[in-house]
Amino acid sequence: MGNNSEADRLLEGAYAIKSAQDNLDYYKEFAAIYDEQFANAMGYVYPRMLATVYQKHTDSTDLPIVDIGCGTGLVANALIEHLQLANLTIDGIDISPEMLAAAKSKGLYRELYQRDLTATDSATAPQPESYGAVLSAGTFTFGHLGPDVLPTLLALGRSNTLYCIGVNSKHYEQQGFARVLESLTDKALISQPIVETMQIYDLVEDSAHAGDTATVLVYRQI
Image (cartoon, rainbow, N blue to C red; front, side, top):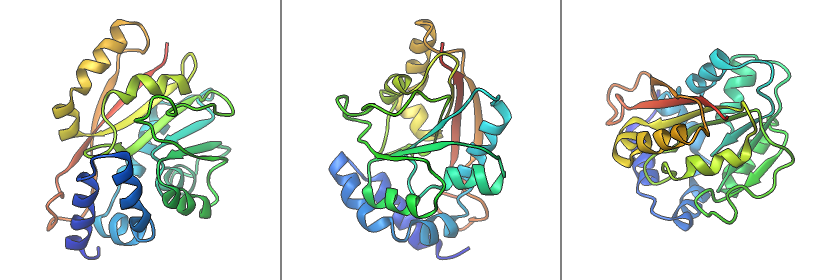
């Protein structure tokens, strides 16, 4: 599967990010090797698993899709090429222009937007339209996005929009995602979430992160 020690090093560097500027700086170099030296080396099945959750819960109204923290485009690739879901319109949002450039080169997205989702004044800058589905894999994790962004994402949707949001399971527990979800539910902003757990990596027994899981939150906007 490749050099897991190098992939682990890259992952730990990503987890160590503390600010938006750290994120920009780190992914400026990481973008060029992300697919080969991280995703392929670690057997990074998370985007494909997230896409399968979308496929399981979606109906014909859940379009267009916005991919939060789209990176190099692995979620779109999983939806269109692996699952072969036809006629999908997908936009992507990411903080890193280099990651967005890598995503653009794959030709899977309608539009790509550079956004810092931790900055409340720009997190949901005007988009071409509201979305029928909001997906995310790998961005709600250490050094990246926390539960405070979940309410912000509602500005991207409309009534009945489907959300499939993957969160690193340790991050989910440590950062209090459940409390934020409970608040959103109590305020009748979202439906009662369905919670699914899935592996993030496959066939990397010698990696420090071999057993890492994601907690996937599935709910609809009210």
